Structures are given as structure tokens and as C-alpha cells.
Amino acid sequence: MTTEQARRAASPMVFPFPVPGEQVRLAYRELHIAINGTEEQKKALGNHALLPRPWEPATCPDPELRHQLWEWFEDVVIWLNREYTWDVPGLIPSCWPLHPHLVHEIAVLADQRRRAGLAMTSDALEEWHRYCLPAFTDRMRNRLRAHCDDEHKSWPAKPRHNEHLGDASTQRRENAFAHDVDALPVTGRAYEQPEPVSRPRLVEVDLDTGEIKDDPLGSQPRTRTEKGPRI
Image 1: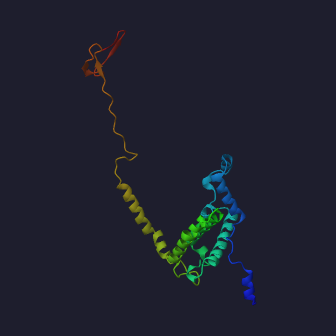
Image 2 (image 1 turned 30 degrees about the vertical axis):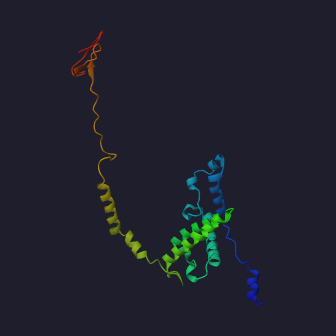
């Protein structure tokens, strides 16, 4: 048996999905408590909106957590390329950290695969195989095309993006925004003064006959005596 054959014989047929570092696991544990914990445990976490979410790296500002997150994604990329990719166009390029669109997608792909692996049935993993992974691969091929097959290429859309940020283009959009606001109907705006509400018309009623007299009360000065009001 050759050395290569011996190496292959010693290697497992498949490798397990990479396990994230301790800080990433802690982040997932806190998210689990935020959903399934007791009221005391949930309260102890503070503002749940500020909890780190590994599938959204921008929510993970802690340096140690962020570093472990990148290491985990790198392990996941290596695992995906080995376990699920046969042809070159399907490989995630080695320059993936330089492509923000890949960083966002790999984060979600890793999270979905982690959750599927923790399920008590194979349903979630089948969904990941059927939809998540193929959809990611198709989008990656469509966006990258052949730009980074051999080495990382600069962002082809960068000149157009810089034009978007230019003063003239920015001012043109601001003018369009202002025009839209000015075109809104005036009715219903918060700053519109409400129409004055007319006060109810007071009239005098004959208590014996129930007849309403023509002259409204208050049309002329009134005086009050011990016997009551008098016109």
C-alpha cells in the first residue's frame, strides 16, 4: 500500500460540521435563554435587542467574539469546499473575507447548518440540502462569475459605486426626495391648523309648554335675581 493509499484509508469518509468557539457558543446560549428561559433569566440578559447574533456579524462587536466568529466561518468554508464541492466553479474562493456579500451569506449558511444539525429529525437538514446550500451556490456563482477563480480581483462595480457617492449624484437624489415630500397633499399634515369648532347654539325653552323660543340665550345681556335668570 502506498503512502497516499494509507492516508486515504486513515481518513474518515466525512468530516463533522465545525464547532464554533466558546464565545460564539455563549452567544447562542444567551439567545436560547432569551427565547426559552425563565422570566428571571430573560431579565438578567438585559436588552435582548443588543444580544449578539452570530448570523449577523455586525451585531458582534466584542473583539474576542468577533475573532472566534471569523475562525468558525473559515472552518465552515473549508468544510463546505471539501464535503459539498466537486467542480471548481462551486468552490468558495479563498478571498471570501474580501467579499462582503459572501461574508453575509456564509454567516447565515453556517447558522442554518448548525441549527439543522441540532434537530432531533433530519427534516431541517433536508431543507438545508434542498434549498439553503444550492441557493447560496447559485448566488455566489452569479455574483462572482470567473473574477476570483485564480486570484482575488478588485471590485468591478467600485467605479459605479463611487459615482453613486459623488456630490452631483447625491444632490440629484436629495432633490428627488424633496420633490416627493413637497408633492404630498396638504390635507392631513400634522402641522395644519384645525378648523375652529362652532359652539353649540343655546336656546330658551318654555318649561310649561316645551316651546323653543326664537331668540337664543345669550343674544342679549342677562341679569340674575333671587328668582332666577331673566331676559
